[in-house]
View 1 (spheres, rainbow, N blue to C red):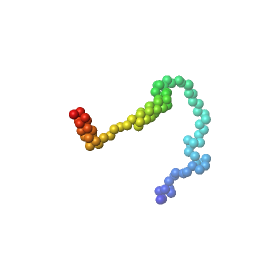
View 2 (view 1 turned 135 degrees about the vertical axis):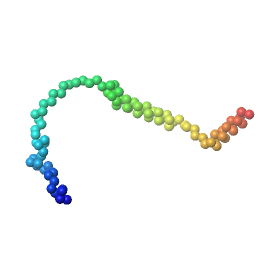
View 3 (view 1 turned 180 degrees about the vertical axis):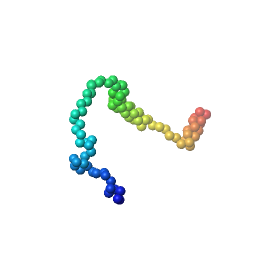
View 4 (view 1 turned 135 degrees about the horizontal axis):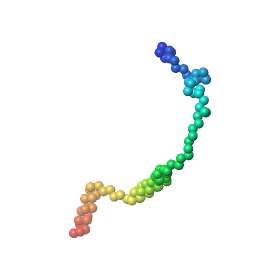
Length: 90
């Protein structure tokens, strides 16, 4: 506890306690930024459109998969169908 009391760390409450970096005015900096036109690849420039198209295609694929019935047969049902086909062919 004594170590914490003897520390030189002060909380910034007023202008007197501010570090020198905060007191220095920064308005005198003059940065000259030239206007530059950058050519961006098409897949980056049209990222939103491409994403929307991919989402729409995925939704269509899921809709078709949900609409298409998937036959799921147990081994016993498969054997029963094979026997029925064998009887029909005789």
